[in-house]
Every structure is written in C-alpha cells, then in structure tokens.
Length: 93
Image (cartoon, rainbow, N blue to C red; front, side, top):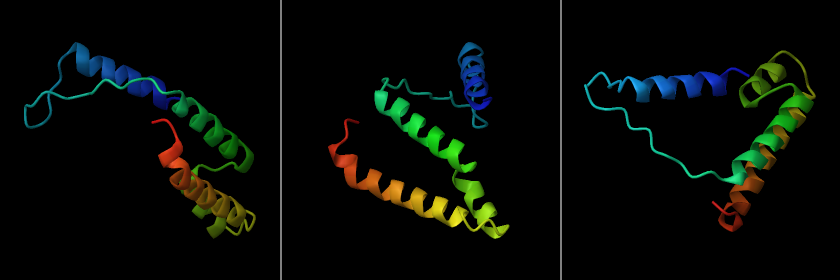
C-alpha cells in the first residue's frame, strides 16, 4: 500500500525540483494516457494475490518451503500469462 504514494511523491519531487540524472541530464518521465485495462488487470492481480497470499516472486519461496499447493499458484500464474499473451493482439492497448 506504499508503492503508489511513494512513486507519486518521487515523481512530484523530480518534477518540482527538476532533478537530473548522475550524467546531469534531465529526468524524462513521459505522460501516459489513462487506460481502463490497467484497472481491470490490477483487480485480477489483486484477487489472485489475495486468494493465494503471493505475488509472483514469493510463489517460489512458498514452493521451496514445502507448501505444495503453491505449485497450483505457479501453474495458474503461468496460465494467466499465456492467456494474456494469446489475447494481447485482441485487447485495446
């Protein structure tokens, strides 16, 4: 719950104080058009995370610690990734 506020504050500070990179170049933060796909994807991701107790990285930790049901989580994550890649050309991006 801290990632979005932290990122928003960081972007605000970079823009307000015109912070530059270590090479003294201006930081380029491109404006992005809002897309409802991000909202739907975040909801699906959040539901999966809530049901399994794991975002993608900790799935391997769960499996390694002997939580065998996490193998189903891994298979589901891989299947979801495959379905997205299959449907991506048909989705409004």
